[in-house]
Image (cartoon, rainbow, N blue to C red; front, side, top):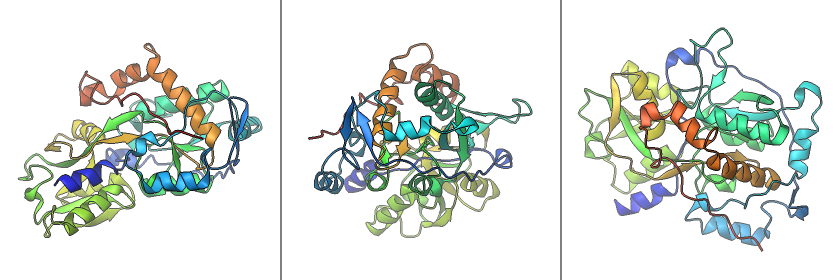
Length: 348
C-alpha cells in the first residue's frame, strides 16, 4: 500500500464532468494557432525548452519526484509567445484556452443562466484573470471545449495557448507540456451510489466495474495497483471512456459500479445527483496546474506571476472564487484545497 501511495502521489488526473443534461451544450471549435518557441524573462533571452540545458531538463524529468515543483519562477516580462498572442489581429486578438464545459462549478454552462449560458466556474474565473493581465481585457478569451484525452494534444498541436481544465500535474505529463505552479490541491476518491456496498479504494471493489477516462493517470494507477496486488484482480478496470462525463452517465445507468476521480470534482457531482456519494478518503495528493506548450517559457513565467498575485488578492482573487463556486461542496475552510507556497525549479 505504501508503494501504491507513493506512485499515486506522483500522478493523477483532472477533468471530470457533471450532468448529462449539460453535455448537450458542448461546442467544438477548430481554430489552429501556432505558438512561438522562444521567450524573454526580465528583459533577457531565455533558451529553448525550459530555460535550462537539455541534459538538465531530461535529468529533472527522469528524477521527477515532485512534479508540482518543476515549474519556472514568476516574471511579468513579455516574450515571443506572449507577443504572438498580443499581435493577433482584430477579433482574433484573444487568449485561446482549452476548458471543460461540463464540470459543475469548475467549467460549465448553467442552463438556467439565460439564453447565452456563458461558461462559468472556478477554472473560468482563473482564465479571465489571465486574459485581463496579458491582454488587458478579462473577456478577451476564446474558449475551446476539449475532452479529457485531448488536453495534451490540443496544446502540442497549437490549437490552444493553454489548458485550464482541472488538470493534474504529474511526472508523465511534464515530459509533454509545461505546467504552472499549482493552483489547487485535491486527491483521487471513489464515487459510487449511496446504496452500494463499496466503502472506498479497498477490497470492496472486488468484482466491481470501475469507470475512468482514457488517457488519465487514474487508469494507470488502477492498472499498476492491480498488477501489484493492491487492487483486487477481479476488479474490472476496462471501462474507459473519452470524457469523464461518460463515466457519470454509466454510473447513473448502472453500467458501472464506481468512478475513480478527483474528490474536488466528485463532490460537485454528488451535490447535483443525490443518489451518489464519495466513498472513503482520498488516496492520493494531487495538484492542478495550468498546462502550456513545452517551450513557452515566457507564458509559463507570466502565468506563475499571475497566480502569485491572484492568491494575494483578497477581494477578487483565489479565496473569493473558492467562496463563490466551491465552498458549497467542499466546505467553507479553503485551507485543505489551497496549494502550499509554490516552489520553482532552479535554473543555471
